[in-house]
Image (cartoon, rainbow, N blue to C red; front, side):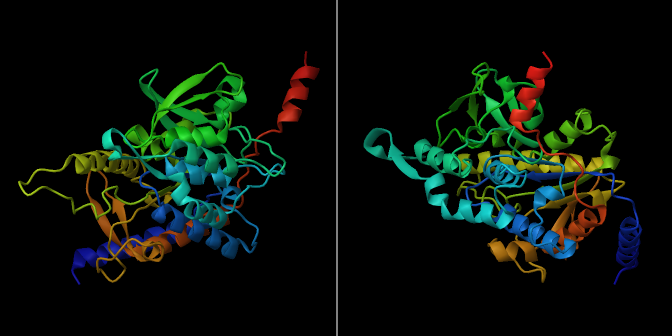
Length: 388
């Protein structure tokens, strides 16, 4: 083994040992889930493993992901999973466990992304918006019939889309919803908005609960397929909810990818016989590039405390170095990849599953999140009424 490789391994072990003794109780924990694709195999497998490890290491089978995170962000199908994880059941607990949320998306996948034909001679394949609407309404409705909104979440939630009316990104957030009903939207509509991919869905029109704010939304993945940077920026500037956060040194971030959109390892791209990239592959490359750029930026921001930022992404390499398919089980056995400062990546000896397990150790060591859940609507209304 080369001397430089031995030195790197020694310093890596020393770094991990030192970090295990670091105080993490005051760090704000951020969970971010990428958009991309329709199956969410990478994020789904990661979320189930994450929650299973939390239950195991915390010693409580009823522990949930939101108990140990202060804010959750998601785009596209990642936003559907994120919203399900933080949706309040009416008693201050999440409506879905990670396993239940992933199972719901898997079982209803054919209805969420139901194919129909359109256009001349009905040759164009698009997805049914009505079918997706029906499934999302079912997911974000309590047993008593209550339709959940951004306010009805156990923890802060961030979901991006692109608004055609303003020609700018629009980020749905619980913080804004609590400030004003003009920024409070029904959760199913928020998920529908961030999933409205232009090539297969029509733009989705939605209005706030008080009818004062409207948005014509398309897929949030076009601008923030990896919403981690948006979540970090939100935490750094939201002093009302996160008064003790002054820099990235106060953060603990877990970012879950959903695999390259092209469906193959990043180094393999489809090209035509003449050597040119196809139009579809160019779109995939652009969207993958957005996610990878965000990862690179955050890798630079956390270069002095790398263990505080963990990115889980499929790369096609199993722990033995062979190339394998990205099925649910294989994802956790792939070797992790870490962005290096100022460009490039390195292949880690740890698998994605092991990296999640190491992250959970720090989560459990720091204890449950101290951030309070959203206030009850009734108590908020009565408080304002009594104050008049």
